[in-house]
Image (cartoon, rainbow, N blue to C red; front, side):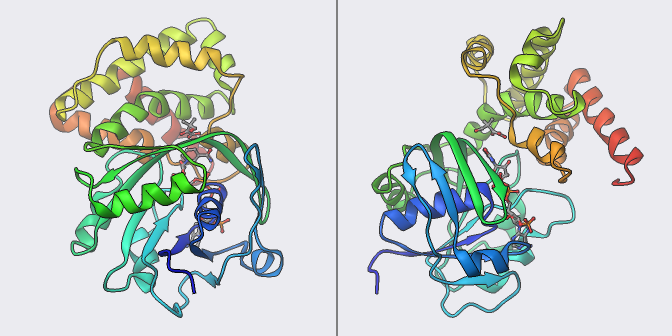
Length: 311
Ligand SMILES: NC(=O)C1=CN([C@@H]2O[C@H](COP(=O)(O)OP(=O)(O)OC[C@H]3O[C@@H](n4cnc5c(N)ncnc54)[C@H](OP(=O)(O)O)[C@@H]3O)[C@@H](O)[C@H]2O)C=CC1
Ligand SMILES: CC(C)(CO)C(=O)C(=O)O
């Protein structure tokens, strides 16, 4: 038996499979809860190609969603897409033992609250993933670049659970930034995701270079970042204007890149529209802050969804 904490990954897609592999490498027992990929993972395990080497592994247990666990995990890591109609509170319920700590590795803003409200006695650790990874076929993940996690206790602080998990990820070869202000860090990450992810969908799966090089593209991104900043400031997270240039320059230095929402759109999967954009517009409305560019993109995406019979 491993003396290291036991880990359960709920939603072992690109992100869950990858970070599960890192914790496996660190010596933890790692089990997974799967939906459509249950049979293939049960049969062949998870295959991961990565610049860190071959990270393929067999989870200690493979469960279907809704099944009853043999043991409750020490850490339950939730990595499903944050989508309307996906009841994350119900999804994790069967696996939440009396001392299970809940960890989120998911994009978006204000995505912790419903889980924190449902499980007030369980420590909740919120993480932001800076990584390029995707599923290439069932049970197969390609890790293309990066991998750092920004991690903190929700709503704020750093506790011993964060430190323990951070040490394990680092032992497995991943960089971790612990933060006292994880909500502020979500806003900072959304300076990038909130403009780029939805625009890439409106632009039919465009990569970062196409978005920035189209006439007016960079100006549009800058205007959207500025709006996200204004909302963040109203929420108590003021940011330096310089971050606009830093985000543009950093993106221009990357090879042309298709973000996770672009990949979902191109693969016919639902997109995290509200987690990444809709919630920002809702918070802006609460503060009476005009966000005309964000709102135009949001409403256009709603129109597309309606046309596709999805909304
Ligand atoms: N990929 C990336 O590079 C990055 C992703 N992120 C964020 O990480 C989060 C996860 O993204 P990613 O891993 O790419 O997404 P994926 O679509 O690759 O994985 C999500 C997984 O959740 C599973 N799932 C959904 N519902 C259930 C359920 N009821 N029971 C069990 N499993 C379920 C899906 O299964 P099924 O196949 O059946 O749908 C899938 O395996 C998102 O919030 C994303 O925005 C952040 C940074 C980068
Ligand atoms: C920041 C980025 C682009 C990858 O880490 C991301 O969050 C995404 O693909 O949605």
